[in-house]
Length: 61
Image (tube, rainbow, N blue to C red; front, side):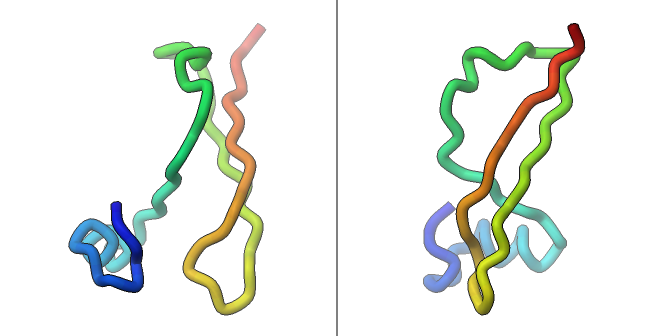
């Protein structure tokens, strides 16, 4: 994506249309192709355009 401060086209286009970017996820090979529900729980940092968060996939038993 590139840094938002540099005005990278992907950030400018996406953020201006209400999109959210989630980067650097790990262990994606363990996620089923179908049947799971993705949830991202960000930590809000005052006066920041980004920050850390927890990503989970809920898979029915």
